[in-house]
Length: 352
Image (cartoon, rainbow, N blue to C red; front, side, top):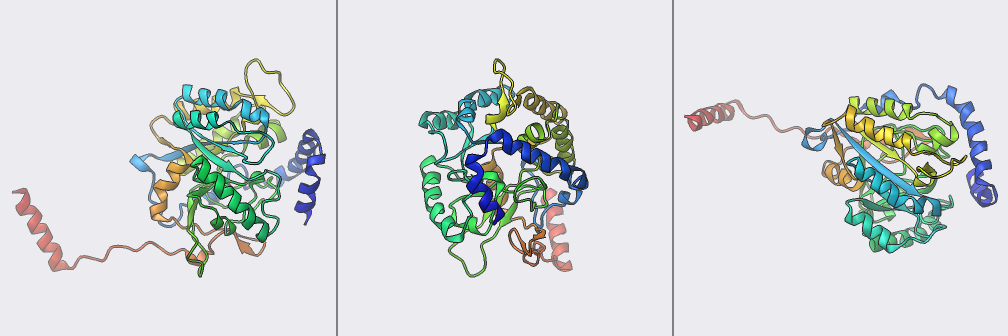
């Protein structure tokens, strides 16, 4: 109820005041959350059926961008060019019915340059999950945009999530959760730094499963707007930890908040140099160790294995399938001794 009231009043509250309120609350929470943020050590356990990363890479490195305002839209091309100059590609998620028109040529240019385009909520007003019937209605519109944009991924505004409801969307993956982030409005984390399969509820065979991609590095808005961090040190440390665990280092950076050279500094932006340092750290410190993938590439690589993650229960229910849905993957049947000897002999004769 309190969330519904907040998002009803939100359009009438200046953004700087909203951030100041969030900063005051989050600062009080930060000391209490030191055991689970920015690193939650229990999130390092791979899901059952985990196949590992393609080409024997130690970890995955995934860049995503949610575009929330006209200012963010105006910076998309600059951000994409910056990433290309450093040898990276990313996904840009746009709000279909938000506060800015989306030029068709921008999406075409991004796709032609090897980037991905995804859908970010519907209106980014915090009301997407206000009721089951409202979500069903909104899902039809979201699916139309997914088809029009040839997109296969979705992320909710404000990282709100109802993973069962998301089966209404025609997507290959969702990216509306996180491993740990006690400062989000819906703070129940997925508790993993790996992608995992969200199976449809039993008895609803018409629904398809999808891959959930939690972000595993703190959002830029949390670090640089809420906590006013002066360096990207938390990003770098968390990246090193995720890499050591063999997980997925997925970050969400908003072009809306980036201050590029020549732009005046402001209370709602941070220097783009922080992001550049992050990219350079990944490229130099972990050269050859990471798979730099688009979100859709991660989803397609792991979906055939359907890695099952036992999600912590929050508010009396879990985010996705309950723990007892996870079963150890089947192991091959043992080869009978006589058959094994025949196999050895045949191999020796083949070598000779």
